Length: 443
Image (cartoon, rainbow, N blue to C red):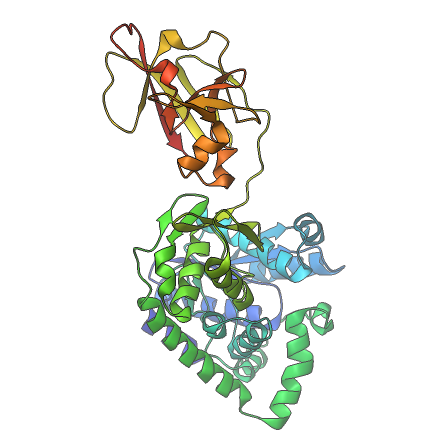
């Protein structure tokens, strides 16, 4: 286990003064990590804090959490216990128990980090866990990015000090230090993917190839280096980013597939999608871009939609359409669901481009802000009436956005399209006495 301390120092995993939260289940691996980090904490000048989560999956899960708390009390280690109903979470979000459990744990860890209770989270993954992860990703259809396995550091705050340590060394450390631990009976239940690989597949592989774990880890290291190089070739100016969507110009899809797959993966990460995207989904995106007509759309997992829109491919989180929006025309600011904030101010004269200026006295007294409806018409600035849908198509407004743009209407007559244009009927001229200016702050 001394290689752990060496790794911590070489890679600066823990700094002097850090408060390190250790994810502790009560099993031998996490108990060994807690014991070891605590044993070197005074010498290296950091504090160890235990974090245990009762997942409510097993009958004995509460006892495991209490075991961890009692151990910490006896050894004067600060500890925190959380309880999350993982079966309920899995049902609510249509996840497997495995995925829901991971989401629950990391939700707890993220909250501890965001509150400043801890500076780092140490996880007890070791060499065998890494080999199992690589195989799991391979069987699920992952590309090179997944085959590199788990990182030693993630997001600068999640660390895996035992990732280069073999399971036998950990077991020997537990025996030598008489460390108590609890067995999780679900470790033998092979309906969990990792358990199936651990209990069924790996023993057969190791029986035929005793050095398989070392070979898998070497492969993961090579994959990591290749992935790092290819990522360095991804054009950094390829994305137009907002909170819920990323746009990639179609002109970038002339790059080779290894570059394109990473562009797409990076675009998904920008909108918070970092898991459950496989190589088949990347292939779907590339084929869609090359073959689909303008205005078409496909859906990916995790509520992600892909749209081909004129000169761009847009990747976006799906949003629920808000159909009840209505607001009177008046000075001030108001929020438009799924769009942002609109502000109307009285000004002395029309000025900056990018803002909409109009004659306030020409607005019908019963005009209301709402979303578009069938039958809406719009008189273009400069003259000529068109159906609103046709006008928005002419302005190259993507179809998925048209239902979310607020419009100022009286009946089916549209007077203002927020962020786009005002009707010819509201134009400012020599007789205008009151000029209003409309600005927007998009989500």
